Image (cartoon, rainbow over all chains, first blue to last red; front, side, top):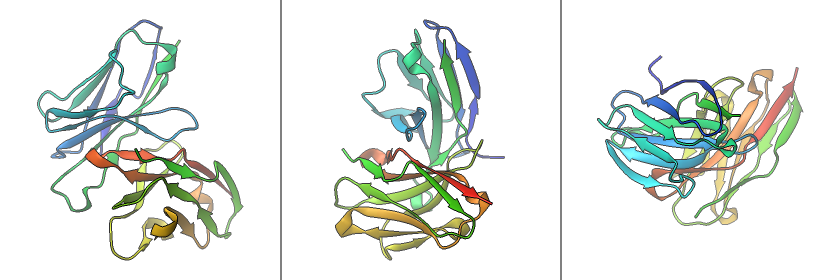
Length: 115
Length: 112
């Protein structure tokens, strides 16, 4: 499968711990996005990259959240000092600005539970 | 900023019934509109999209959607649902910066 892959798929952590999620986009997709989804809601935009540049961050992305895409390929999303309110599904997506239609493709997500 | 409203959070239909899921977005201008589907245990998949042209858009698996600019709507339809259409459906609009703004989703359950 050459889709967007995310790791880990599930993470349970204690409040106050740091967690990191990794996303590998579809090969040669130059845009990469992070979204967050909670139960009963649609995905909410967090941030996106074009190549290695982080072009936009949502107000939802507090100072405890940081995302990187150092070589313009995979990306990491780190949450420091986790809080129970951080429990959610973290979705990664990618797209290509050169492909027709510029469709955004999503990964299966990483479930975070903060206890 | 755009917002997206999906009218029904849960819909239950029998097989072969017709489906229409409502979606409204908050303001006009040029919009790119999408419907995504999430089958149980799977990732979000694109059903169909509207960028311009014919306001009646056909997607995969027999789904279609109609863009009505005057009503700020992009409703999803299927003439005859199957049990395998059981899933959660999300309407989305593309905002500046290429980000998608999603509705809260509609959970469809099709009874066999």
